[in-house]
Length: 168
Ligand SMILES: O=P(O)(O)OC[C@H]1O[C@H](OP(=O)(O)OP(=O)(O)O)[C@H](O)[C@@H]1O
Ligand code: HPA
Ligand SMILES: [Mg+2]
Image (cartoon, rainbow, N blue to C red):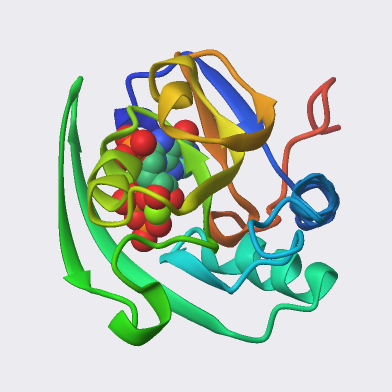
């Protein structure tokens, strides 16, 4: 799978790292909501946004949590996105005011662009950001270069590697 990726650099994120970075994201968002600093609710962009969203929701004591399912198609520089499932309209209101929308990363920005068009007053937060998509995100923790591929722990498994000096 990885050998068909056109990226040269890999940024491998462990469970521990994504937990710490998601917590840092939560702390940055704490007290920033429009309603006395509070957020009205949280929406995770499936599927990658669900793990960070759960951690942010716990840190900030947010129990009103929903999802938006966005399917992206990445081929070279061209990306298209389609909404497969929208969050509860009662929760989102007319424009998403007071709602925190969380994803694991922004890359080209196509996913957030689509969701932002639906909820222009929501606050968009990701754990990681690449330069192309940075304008689409309001708050993020770590920026990586555009040619870096971020490997998340849910896409990886521990495996055997040969010793550096080879086997005896
Ligand atoms: O800024 P973009 O270029 O739109 O890319 C970012 C999106 O791509 C990945 O999701 P993907 O659509 O691969 O689905 P998944 O979360 O279900 O893995 C990632 O989780 C972001 O949601
Ligand atoms: O760098 C990435 N890593 C994992 N999924 C992604 N989807 C878009 N960019 C990335
Ligand atoms: Mg995603």
